[in-house]
Length: 125
Image (cartoon, rainbow, N blue to C red):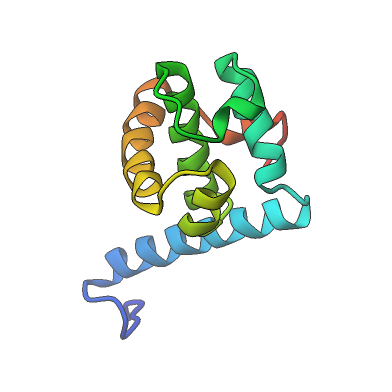
């Protein structure tokens, strides 16, 4: 017998890996919610990591450090905290399309540098 799911096309091993990844992401999301972690915690943590003031994250600054911080905030807010792109855009006072591009750019940065949201927030997830 092989594990199957009508929503996923593939053999049993592939289906199991997709479901396991999905379950892990869902568990991480709920852990953040249970601990009360949201944008109000993420934004200052990223600003401190980059070495800027949290107020600099909002607005249209083109300084490299500010843009980098915004990219990281956008990525973690959308992928880890599951905040909508439109909410992130409102909080950072940037366009939703800018948040979408920031998420893509930050994915590469995070992969190359091995950054983890848990390290920035000084917590165990």
